[in-house]
Length: 487
RNA sequence: GGGAGUGUAGCUCAGCAGGUAGAGCAACGGACUUUUAAUCCGUAGGUCCUGGGUUCGAAUCCCAGCACUCUCACCA
Image 1: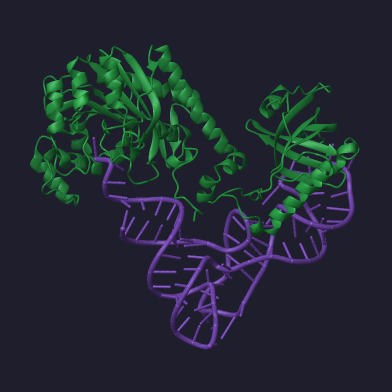
Image 2: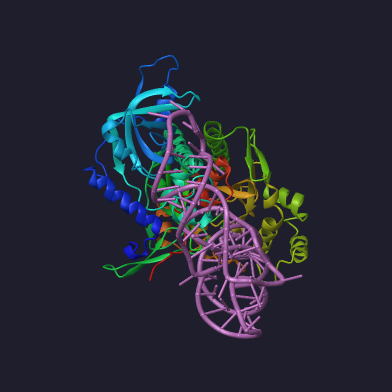
């Protein structure tokens, strides 16, 4: 939606007037190819104090401008840093008119000698003919000191947020680097990256409401995936022994500082492994990311301090329920009594669901330092292999950090008969179930799936912790927002 | 969906025992060749979120709505 021209306020009209001035000087305000751009961070790093002959050529956005009559100082910023640019009437004789047209927000290219001013500021002194307009900024930029503060505006105008607030740029660069590290590490370990369907005829592998879409020529509804799990397991059947996928999942649930309707998930599967192998792998992978891209071994997170020193705590579901929930998972009366105390409405709710309600209400918040919670009540885990000696427990762990669920892993269930039975069990008291009958998946299992360990890591949440932000919207470039200004 | 809070100039915010709006930055005009949130002098800029109500009079009080933030619930 383009802004109607008559709605332009005075400030925008001033900028439009400036655009005309630039054009009147015979200069294209929107520039063209500009070769030989040196990243500003690189210019700063490469500067030698005793060498007077250094030059620099770069491009970026004007974020500050100090006009002193016949001398103009500009702070130019690109995605690697900021540098001062000096424009003097004496040096820029033929381009001085252009120099006086510059405004905060404009994108320019400059070239000239590199030196320090008497106050010690590294400065590119632009030479005549070396000032290039690359793009005029017509919209009015935010205030230079406080910047863009309004949270809603920051998300809606993320492109402004990125250049106004350098820490935002830095955070998203860190996000990409963390994902690169994970990818490189998994590949070094022999994993192969694959892509499985985002549109599925059945949404399985997790317990969540899906988004529905429609395929016109087939005239069928399709679901945006809530998890890639059941397809990745089909690949295990096909003989792809170590695979991973880093991509989007979609869940049609409420929004919060920890939930975005589309989020990025790492899922990986390793044939012939189990959940203990996954536990070691998780600890190694996250430790590596923290060492390379965050402060390690301690991370400040909100008002908490997380200690990532290895080995991480490993405790069973039952132990934790006893320690923090003060009830015995194997004595359902004690659990229900606790549920009543906590004000949980548990009549007509299956035992396992009540246990989980109490767990979530009492245990999760205490799991600040990384903690592996293992051996879940089997009925809560229809896709997981049972413990050999304890069929009521499933070989599953979840990793918690900062009271937040970060990873989930199983020894994968590969017995088609048990899987079929599990798909039929519907627990009372659950809004959504993980157990949706999937005939096609059962067929795959009947061909034989190797025993395997499987792991899912919520990438957005991992990045929240590693970059120390408490809202998932701060690690997603364009978080979900209510559409605005549409008629 | 429940609770709490916020909505005033382009941006960041004041103003609220009811008397029809203020600062800083940005903008415009002027001065200034070493500033760096440049400085100095001057000018202009508002549907006080929207709609009702109370009142002689509402940015301010009341009601409803909209948007956003936090929080609880949902997301086992």
